[in-house]
Image 1 (tube, helix red, strand yellow):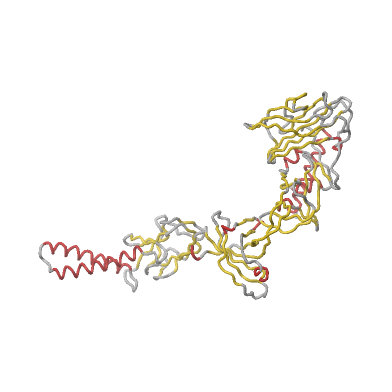
Image 2 (cartoon, helix red, strand yellow):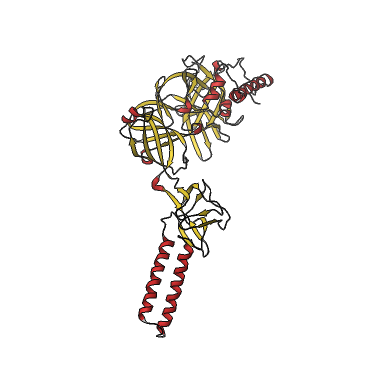
Amino acid sequence: MLARFLPLLIILIIVGLTACEEHGHEHSHSHSDDHSHSHEEYHRLTFWDAGLEVFARFELHENSGRIEGELFVSEGKSPVEHLSGEIHFMENRRSVTAQELEARRNGIFPFELFFEDSDEPQLAVIFQIGDEEYEIELGSVYRYAGHPEEPDVDDLAVLEKPMQWQMSIKSDVASTREIPDVVAGFGTILQNPQHYYEVRSPVDGHIDLNDSGILPSPGITVEGGDRLVAISPQFSSENSWTGQRLAYEQAKEAFERAERLLENDAISLREYQQREREYEVRRAGYHHFIESTHHGATIEDAGSDLYLNAVQSAVVAESYVVSGREVRQGDLLFTLFDPRYLWLEVLANRNELAGLPEITGAEIVMNRDERVTLSQSEVSLVSRDLRSDASGSRSKITLSVDNSSGSFSLNQPVRVRLKGSEGQYFPAVPNEALFDNESHKVIFIVHSGDQFERRMVQTGGSYGGWTAITEGLEEGERVVTQGIYPLHLMTGNVQIEDDHDH
């Protein structure tokens, strides 16, 4: 129960500390005009470009002909720690008044500029971050604008930039995306039979430890040529390797002796040829046995032992070897598979599968809502079985999947969304941009650097981490894409201010 409310508790503590510090500290800079400095008095200009945000928030002092405020500069979700540059009033692309940017704290630069001849100059900044130089026009400032206009929305919240940086809030422009028709189902990751093999004992004998004293266990990755197991063959049995090897050694020794005798005319040509044929037969049988991989492994003759080595890089799926265990020829010792190539067996609605003639991708959802989206080149159809299961409503489809990323594990249960060949275009947001507020879906629209609109929307289909918004969002609007849950908590019933040095 505590874990469920822990994020809310943390936010409330932050809110409390912020409020206390606001009462306990003086404002870091004085104002000549007597204002309460509420958020309604601020004029706002914001510039976004990819991950860069430049946000100017200022008060307009008409009587003294000046503006006074702060510039907030962010990259990604964090304040810019080091930059050099100036903020300007520009008239006809000419600077008429300027101030050097000096940070009050990371990412925050106070400024004060005076109007000159023009009543509506452009507010611009010129600065350098590392090797990058920027010249940005934030917008025009009208000397007699009076009270700033606020966005005409029902539910607007203000959240200070320092608090946004602490909460890692990120936003982006909503774009139109193709959201395909999908069929949802449940699946299991299986081995691909074309990349799966078994290792069986080639002889009767018993299991010895490897030189390392370790036998491979399930889940262990072995490389081609790695030692799997050592087998000590029995001296006498129906499938005795020792007997076969001894017969080969004896035939080899007899042939070499016959060669010496033939040189001294101490043996007939016929007898020599008989020993030669016997040796060649035994040698062929020996090399066929050693060089064959029909038992699933390469065989290495180590004298008293036979070593079984991995044919290729693979993962051990099952192991039936125990040191000292007796084995018979053909007994299963290991199963191995190449984890880069797997099968996905999916059960889904029979009628929906029948209406999906082509599969062009798959979204696979694992534990903790981790998602992997596979393109058409990473997934291919193996088989369809449109017969119903026992429930009468589901059918099975088998896919070959590329697991080069190592995202999937053998026998892993997953949720699956199969993508068809056609889709529709909608304004779409990342799944993380949506918040379930009771029975409604909520997103946050960014109106300026510190103004957020809580907006209820209607959603459509989703795929690849994106959800279609069928009502309530226009292409080009800026949406919070990360940090929406703490933003929801922080802006639910309270306006957070962090306008002071601490």
